[in-house]
Length: 375
Ligand SMILES: *Cc1c(COP(=O)(O)O)cnc(C)c1O
Image (cartoon, rainbow, N blue to C red; front, top):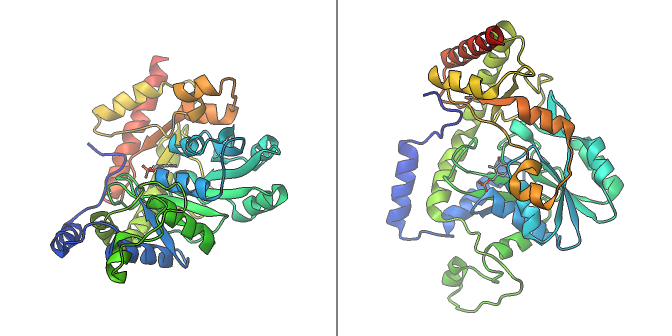
């Protein structure tokens, strides 16, 4: 089965794990620190804070910005549920905004602007599918309304500019992302103060960590804020250090595969709408396409599965998930809703060959023709 996403893990990761186990120090030590330093350097930043997940990163960023009850945070609905959940974790209210267009499925500046109120403290921007949003336009909006910009950068690692839009950016190293530590996340911010607050919040609000106390030969610490346990361990950091070295070649491979998709889809599936054809900077995290209106996505996905091709959906819109529908009824986002109705995600990962792309597109073309003949 050709999978939608697949981690690249091999001997180098196994060696790094063994070395970590042999070292006898398994959490919050030199490897986590080096991973933070290398990740920051890779993104032109001075420093970074490693955490247990992107969800934890988003939570800590909002907490460090003192966002809480009574505050509103504008979020897309075309995202993973964690984006909106992080707003609820700090007691604030998520306000959903629509995407720009079917062929440009990134948060709409106009709709965000329409949803900003005196209570709005921040906007969480998702670089959907790895495509970087328009930095200048978003910074202008943030300045106009005095709101914080937070990047949910789960889809984009290693692309120039990510992490520089606003207050901070949250990254994910979950197993299906462009690089992985199995579970894991990272915070980038250009504000040393904000970064320091998230660092302290990550470890119970304590003024020093175990590793620092070992080196300082003192057992003293204080707790100055209500913190969490969102730490990363040495085993994950060891894998992350290896993965980071290979990220550029994987991102380049993703681009080659995406270009092959663009050519093959234009030739064999002209009915398919492929977003982001304007070709801006992207980490090509996923390969979302829109089926023709009225076609059954379920039937297409079953046909593709039988042809050995897995597909998924990015995403069921968050405002339609039961938990959110119950709490925030009556939200209407017409472009997001049409996008999510018609979207199907095709396999895209660095282990794929160009011939795999041809296999997917041929099967998709057949599935569309077959359904066209039936209806
Ligand atoms: C994967 C993902 C997350 C959550 O990442 P975790 O590391 O699993 O917490 C958040 N937002 C988006 C857009 C994602 O794709």
